[in-house]
Length: 126
Image 1 (cartoon, rainbow, N blue to C red):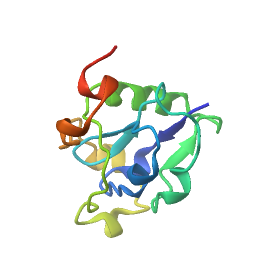
Image 2: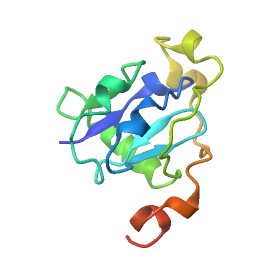
Image 3: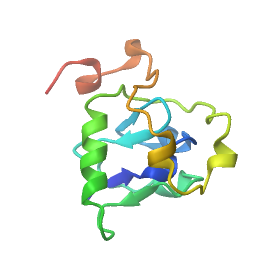
Image 4: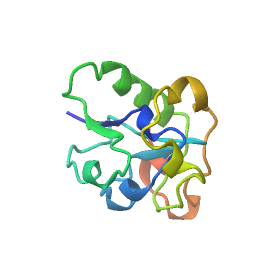
């Protein structure tokens, strides 16, 4: 099992989840986060931290597409390890339908300070 981030995160990008993750498996896009499914240890501490209810276990119905979505973008975007302010319109966009079509960006976010990274996140691994 793993946890994934779904489209509820788009245009909100609350990062409360990042601070509690014990393995730093969150990756930052321009306007959302994803979880690397192979790095997630299934602890579940991130799920209740998300104000947008965007983090779900992959055991829920129809989650395969989100597992692959999270895998794809976690390989392209930088790791994020510290909490940041949410996007300016986060409260307004929270719960809005159709966010994938309206707002999703494939662009990477800023990510973490590379001086504090280790392992794969610093480029020392597969």
